[in-house]
Image (tube, rainbow, N blue to C red; front, top):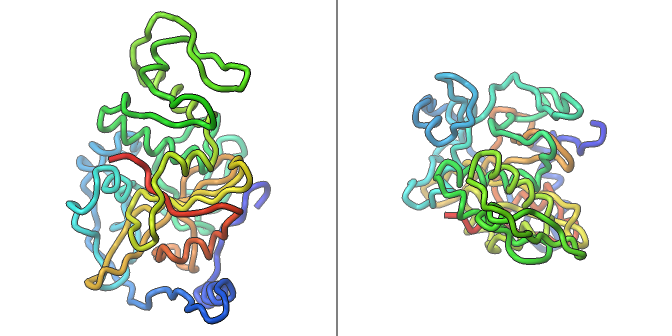
Length: 306
């Protein structure tokens, strides 16, 4: 697949072999739930979606988890009152149609449509859109929808926290340690361009390790939509992020998720093909570290966004 990592396409029997070979002797191997696949009522509430995701480019059309996927029998979305605003928002991210290829701005097509489950309908930067970047952009887009841009704050690799109001209040510079400082300058008004430039600054000053540092560590049984599995090497400049998106639960509280990925360098946000069925992307959270092994440091994390 060129310079990007290949999309994983094991059938269920191969997935089972991967799981068994990845756990130690005497440890029970986590199992994928054995359930039927059913259709659910499609969700075509375009005005509802567009209010929450104004970056959608379709007119009067919604591609959602309900309209695109088969669901595990006996599972449903959780009660919305049990989720924070950001968790609910992340769980409803819209999709592209099933024929759309996965694209890179720089290199064009990366994967054919049948090599992934679905691309996620989400805006991307032209200059950079790695899987690390996607986290910051998810948080930023939610802040824009909620008109809370001034609440967007990131702790960078070093130096003081990056605060949007500080960014508008001075002229950007770097000190001898490559830390962000601001020189005296007239304060600028907030705008879409200013906020986008600020988020891009946050991305340049972040690593996979600092991404985890801007979150709270979570146990696997506590995971919810919007949480992430992050793994990184060394000081955090190389790594991987797996995003937990739509969550469904059964009557016993068992959870299954769709997950979102990016690429190490630049490509669109997408749901991977994990089990040979493009229309059935559900996975349990304990499978994620097995499918995407630790690169040195790793864990599940929850962003500090409500």
